[in-house]
Length: 483
Image 1 (cartoon, rainbow, N blue to C red):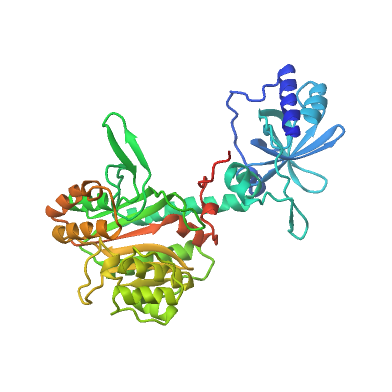
Image 2 (cartoon, rainbow, N blue to C red):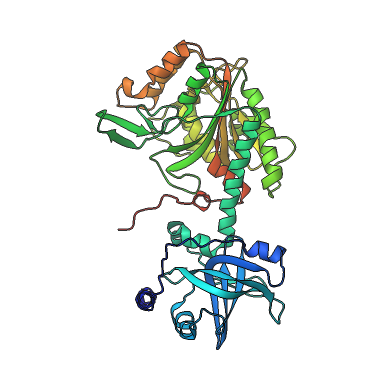
């Protein structure tokens, strides 16, 4: 706080000597640290800008190190070439310029006696005064870091500071941007259509989750932030669009942990005239392409494993649950210490067993296939196996990365499943609020056989950047309010 007050006093002094600390003019830039190093030419004129990282005052000459988007630039300033007034050098540079300030420099390139590429400043302008002390991250010759900005609570709340001082964090987000761009190009080249669906929805459909609720004053109606865009994309297939996708921002009013944030990004993709077997092959090829370009983890082997849902439970618990009834499954839950409650039905019990005892142990890319029909209200019944659905989840490093079905397109069966789902989850809301009757109507017009998949984009980024916490790959993760 004391440093903040000192810098505010400096702000007033800058105004007193007619130096605007926040000027409005355009300041053109024609170079950066990377270009300067890669294309060095003695006496070459440059216009650069960046944030002051270090200041070394040496009497009549000084060095400033600035940081731009590509790296660091050393600026050399001589009292004889700094504006036309030497007292500005002595007063402004020595007393009013701080680490964290953003400056613009006009000058030319040269090499110092130690052969360091530098910019000889002919003009220097303050563009933005920093009113807080930046964390002073230092590294020794062995690469060890000291005084790092490493408190996770502060880092996630103040992502802007994290990006300034921790270069590896910026690289995570540059990778995120490149991955999303790669995916978009990959799909567009294959004639998939990127579409947009509503974020405000009158029915929180397409998944089981607690929604965020809002109210529309003009329509005098309750709306929900979407928990899924699945049903809208399927309506587009009914309308004749055969290959669609959307990067969907979804919202679920539930817990926060290392794999969950209330606001998250999903890639939803739907293809007509295909099934979940086709989608498994597509997913494998697609992720191997991503892995070759972005992953250094060695996870992307030549072929992904395939294990059925019940096989996975047997492998990791020792119990074969395929033909057991609900009461028998409940007893096993207690025996193997799976947390459940008395209201849970068969599908929910199986889900808890898998999530608590199996999922975290699956490290290599694995398709968990053929889920119980009770767990898959939007998937087709398996064509060969009674009681199962044509559904898979892709698990990598103990985390669900994707979920896919052969999509149910029978409107009568779908309506029955929705009604069963309401009873299963003990919903107290009216049926009209939970069953998307317009979606049922669309199916009555005929949706072609199709398959769809949802990829957790945030989790993919975690995988490819070797992060285990979702907050590390979100610019602005949701945080508890400070009172």
